Length: 288
Image (cartoon, rainbow, N blue to C red; front, side):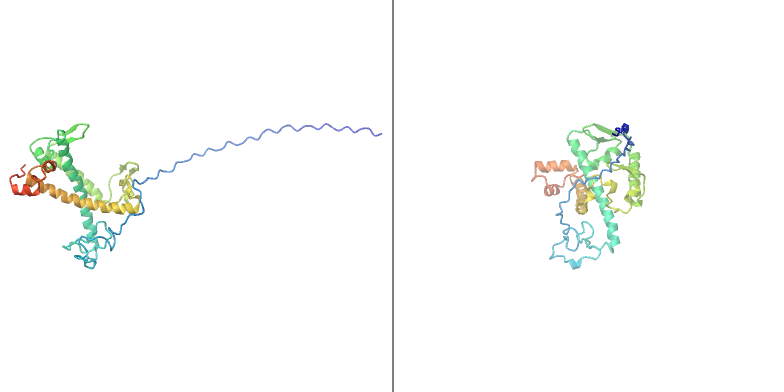
């Protein structure tokens, strides 16, 4: 008989220690800059053919003005081009661009001027103590030694203690500096809401009349169709404002009153106070 073979005890392998995992590197995600969302949404149905191109509307009906009679430099590429140049002031496309810049700048000033002529008198009618509230009397108050006041209703009324000899040069200098920066395309850095700091490089390659860019706070120009339509609306309102300022000037000469007073008188008595009755009376004359 063979003796039983004794098996050596099998040593149990020591449990392996769990491998230590290298700590995962934390990667910081940098948030992408917020994309500006336009306040206007394009419906895709903006019909620009009535404002631009060869088939656009003209300043006279078809029977009175043929498209073959239009000068070549009025080709419908600019907003508000109705083919109107009866005196032939422009001789080339370069002239048209130059006069368009003059027109839009004067129109923007006229829109601001119309608001400046209406708002102070309206606030004064509502009880705000504004000196020289009627727009054509403002300079007379300053010339008479009085202080002009600025209303910031409902926060109060602030006086301007500067005499006219200082106030006018300050305004001329400020407006002159702005126009200098605009025409040269260079100037100090600025800040715009939602955009932050910017300098003149932000306007490189943009239209000099309607640049958009940092000055387009609400993203109106993000959609090209909406932008093209807004350019038409701007030039139409600018032309209307220039005519309105001319009307305010003649109204002051004829009636000797402000536009709010004239409007109130007309509403109170439409048939007794209108253009024809005022002209036929011939009694009231504007005086400083």
